[in-house]
Image 1: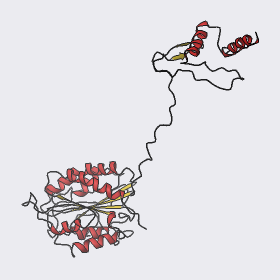
Image 2: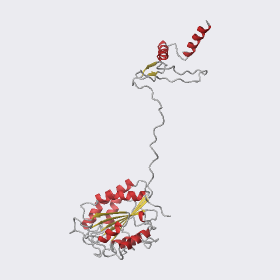
Image 3: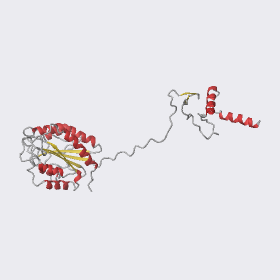
Length: 345
């Protein structure tokens, strides 16, 4: 009799969390008997273990618990979702690019044969700078400047007639014949805060009234040198030692005007960047060797030699219908150089 009473008592305790609803009592009992379920949790303070509320056997019907405590088949057929563990780790976020700043200098030939090439440059530039901004999303700022291949007489005072002076005003045949500033920087270079399509279009159309004895490399070295970068000088603030330098040379002539030879230009430019050659990208739109447009451009052997000395150097055809494909391919070169940028010591 005591054993029977004890069994009755245990059965009563096991069902003490249930209401008088016969359907629920039957469901709970059936779950215990079948082994595919367990009792719902109770609020009985004497009970220290919370039992799971669903079955684990394959092919069973999942139950949902209503507000009144009753059980019914889950209409979705899926049952409650289980926390099956932590979502697999996707790995650490990608490392930011090493270069946070980029200085772009465009050296544009302004001799008499360059009208079409200047138009091509202006048309191709917006896509180029947009891709740079999209690819180098970690870059904090861009500096963009334009110089001609001679002592540009159309420039704004006091930088008119200064070889390598950043252009803010144009004059002469086939030029934009306009004042291109003021730039947001308050200096003679553009930044990402400017309306670059409009400002660059103005500055890059330097016209075709320039000296036929082009000096593209000498103009570049002057533009990037310390003399014109002094406070109050034409290019103050343009060059930053902690920025990746992208030099773009655009000419349809051989480089016969600049003093020195390709190794001299290479060494001088690397010295201007603290001796770190890989912090420089050179892009040359020139007459390459065996060009399809041999009648439209001289083969620029000396510029080719110069560009090929750099780890990150690219050469394109000056007579291409569009410069956009060349600039698009150059983005990968710039991106790699930015990843491997070495901050100055």
